[in-house]
Length: 335
Image (cartoon, rainbow, N blue to C red):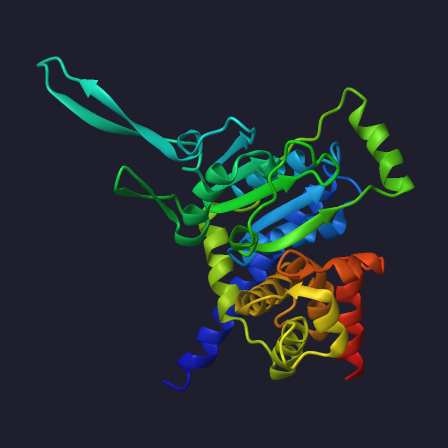
């Protein structure tokens, strides 16, 4: 029995290294398609490896749609895209029941699945749909099934939502409610590429050659990655850093005077869970066997920026959420 344990550990490490290698190949392939967005690629893959959903926020034309479709092809996931508009109804996403009549005159309802029945759903411009339609995704994102006409319908596994949001055009949009924002593991802000990346983009996307994408993983591989992420050890020092940072962002009686003065509401326990999973997933896709304190610092904004809100006093000082999170990180480091 003693001899079997090292072999079991060796097999687990071998499987981990195999999955990490596949993730690394996916990172490299995405970098050849989506230029100048290395951090966005890493955070997106970490979101999926952690078993979560991601919110991509950026201006039009920054390859958010291309990123999602490329991820689906590389990871071997079935993918569907829904363009959210003000007239979109919940049934357009979840599906609906139709009354059918058979040849013998018998009538019965049949469920027609909507686009949510896939492994990777791209919710494009999610804040353009009404709150009623946005809330249709809540049950799917949290419970992996939907209820239509009182009947439960399970979603495929794995199931992930990668939603996009345009921060510039606010007219005709409906801000996502806090409950739904909290369902997103990470909010990934997509910025403009640097000069070298944009120059390369021009050279490689305006010619006749096309970049082919071949799957490097399967859906089963992704599920295995998610299991390995949860089995990965996480140091007590890292856990303490996560809890210190999350709890420091809450405007309660234990908070600093500045936090109570500027924060309207802070992150709940789901933020700590997101930190733990995302830090381990980030370590995996980089081939590391455990997360570090640097991972916590790197993930502070993606984990917290959509789980807290500043009040009018902060806006009057010209402090935005990302700047305030930097203050929290520096304060936790100095403490």
